[in-house]
Image (cartoon, rainbow, N blue to C red; front, side):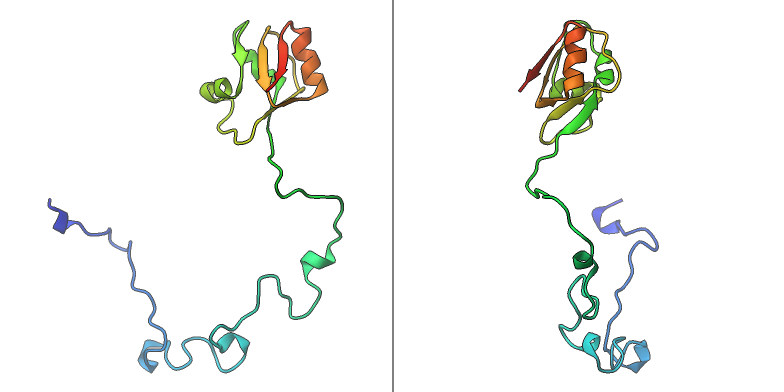
Length: 146
């Protein structure tokens, strides 16, 4: 087999529709746009969310509070997930990624208090819930904010 022998699999490619190329194509004359009207024009159509002058859904729904679009959400894990580490281990984002507890952690780690921890661990994270901190320290470990 040579490079010039390669072809795509049968049915993998198709020829695009040629609009406005005569009646015989089935897409001639108005090219599938119908007659007149806003959507038949070049550049015609409405913006996303436009509802014909009716008050759009995004403006009808009540808004409450403040939504920070620049917020960097922390990845959360529970203290129960820390039991897979041996006694005296230092648990941080890299260790959690290596063991497969986390698949990704973009902005930081927050440890939550669901479950129990039975091992003495040093946990490095961006944030801890109060109950998680108490459970880690009750097991003899340390909760360090990085």
